[in-house]
Structure formats: structure tokens, C-alpha cells
Length: 503
Image (cartoon, rainbow, N blue to C red; front, side, top):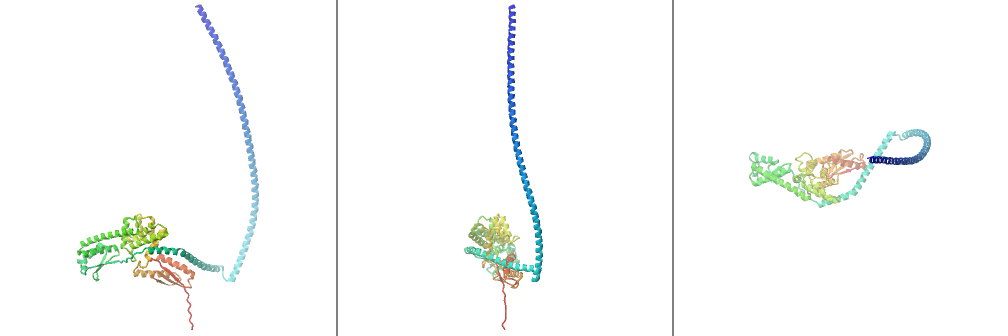
């Protein structure tokens, strides 16, 4: 036990010494690490100080260089500003000198102007004394001379322009129109406001009148026409402004005469059948017109309206035949001019469509035709051609002008149209009165069935140059105030006659 205790004591002492030795070695190593760290930190610190000094030196060098550059730039700008200031000073001095010079010259000019005005006043007084005219009188005389000269020049320019226009356009227009007329011709049917129905005998008149006139009253009420039964043998006259009604009455009356049974009930049946027949004829005539002209795609209702023109006349000319003719002529003119003839033929066929309804609707046939064309979705250029074919609106395209020309050609050909004697005389009187309204006109004569107006002027009031202007003014007024087929020639005559007798 003693030995064990001694061994334990010795072990403890040994381990203590080993621990103390280990701790000493660790402290030495720690001191060594600390010393190395201190040395490394000092080294890093020295390197950082050196780098900082280098950076500070570099920045200072750059700052000095930039300061020098800016100082040089400022000096350069300052020098430039000084130079500009010197230039401005010199210019200011130069401007002051010029201003003084101009002021001096202005005073001299004012003095010269005053002197010139004094000279002018003196010269004007001398001229007035020599000529015997005041300044206003001389001005009036000069204006009168200038007006005469201008009238002469304007007349000469009008004649020159007309001559050039005729030289360039007359031959081509004649060729196109003559070609169109030669390539198309149609018959004309003159119709009046009455139709005649032949009777097998005069006894039929009594049967048509009926007991106490009930048959004739029924027929007139159902058809809207007037039956004229007079002393004309074996003939009854049907009178109505509406050709369709007149045609219905004629067909119904002929059927009643053939049937022999004439009483109110039978009259109603025959009128209904006649109305259906006329409707069929109207539709067929419209379809036939579309077929003859080669125009396609027209609304069926518009075709039916077109067929009604078969029973419509204008100045004795059948409007449906006239429309077909205008369509053909317009297509030919369009082909001669090198444009598409299809729109021209379509517009020509529909241009007078309003005449089929002008007895049922208010307004001119032009406005009614435009309304119907719009209602059935016709193209805008077709609608405008219909609106412009009588000049109610201004022509905007070549198509409008072609329709106007084709319409005039169809209406103006000899024998195409006629008018009653009363309206004819009124038109001639109106034509002469228009020309007589102009000052300087002595006498007027409407000749060649109103296609020419011959105007005698007073030679002491109208000069040769003024005749050109007067003729144009008369023509313009005739165009604006008078309706007429074709064209009217305005022929002015100015002559001086000297009469002396040898005794």
C-alpha cells in the first residue's frame, strides 16, 4: 500500500510536470504566432501606407493637370470673349456711322421729294392750263380710253380662245357625234293625249252609255279617263293625261265590244283584265329595253318603272325609245373616247326614269329619277349622271357630260320631238323678249322654228368688239331662263347705212 501510494504520488507529480511543460510550449508557440501576426500586420500597414501615398500622389497629379487644362480653357474663352467684344465695339461704331449717314441721306431724300412734289404741282398746273382739263377730267378720259381698249382686248381674247377651242375640239366632237348618230337610229312614235276606239256600229254607243249613263260612269270611275261620245260615226274617243290609264281603258273597251255583254259588273272584270295585260306589257317592255341595251343587274322594280315609259311621251317623242336611244348613243360616245361604255349605257337608259312617276309624285322628273335610283341602290356616278343630265347640278365627271350630249342628240334630231302651237309661240316670244332686254338692241327675230335668234343692234351704241360680249351674254341668259330642245344660234348684226339722193 505504501508503495502504491508512493507510485500514485510519483505519477501525479510526473503528469503535472508534463502538463507544465506542455503549457509552456503552448505559451511559447502562442507568443511566436502573436509576434508573427504583429510583424505581418506591420508589413501590411506599411504596404497600405505606401499604396495610399501613391494613390494620393496620382490623384494630386491628375487634379493639377485638370486644373491646368481648365485654367487654359478659361484663358482661351476669356481671350475669345475679349476678341468678340472688340468686334462688337467696332460694329457698333460702324452702325452708328451708317445711321448718321442714313439720317443725312433721308433728310436729303425728303428735301428732294418735297422739291419733286413742288415740280409736279407746277407741271400739273401747266398741263391743266395747256390741255384745258383738270386732273379728274383727264383721269376720266384715260379710264374711258382704257375701257375701250380693254373691251377690244377682251373681245379679241374671247374670239382667239373660241377659235383655238373650235380648232382643237370641233373636228373631234363632230367625228364622235356623227359616228354615234350613224351607228344608231330608231323610229319615233308621236302620241297625243287621246285614243280612238272603233265601233262596229253606232248602236254600240248607246250600249256603252247604258241606262241613265251607268255603264260609261262605271268605266270612267274604274279607269280614271274621260269617254267622249260625239257625232263622229262609229268612234269613241278616250281622253286622259295618263297614257297608262288611257291604254287600260282602251283595252277594256275593246274587250267589252268584242264580248257584247256590257254592264257594270262585266266592266269591272274587263278593266281588271286590261290592267293585268298592261302590267305584263310594262314588265316586258322594261325587260326588252334592258335586253336591247345590254344593261344588266337592274332591280326588278326599276325595270318595271322603266317599262312604264312605253306609255310616256315628251314633246311627242316616246320616252322609252328615247331612253334606249340615249343609252346606245352614250355607249358609242364612251367607246369613241376610250372609256368603259357600260356605265354610260346604264346611265343613259335610266336618265329619264323619273318621267314614269312624275304624274304621281311631286317634283321634277330629275329629282324623282334621282330618288328612285337611290332607293334601288344604283351607283353614285349613275345617280349623279341622272341629276346632271339637264344641268340641274354641275357635271363632275366625263360620264355626266356624255349623258348630256347623248340626251341632246336624241332630242334635237329633226322630227324627234314636237310641241303644241301655243307653247311653241310662247317660247318664241320669250326668246325675242330676252334679247330685247339688253341695251343697244334695236330689233330681234326668232327664225328657223326658234333654233336661231337674229339680233339687230344699234351701231352707235354697240361696237364690233362689244358684239362678241353681247352675244355671249344673250346666249347665257337664254340657257338660264328658257327650256328648248337642241341648241339656239344667237346671230348679232351691226350695220351702218348711208342714204343720199341725187337730184
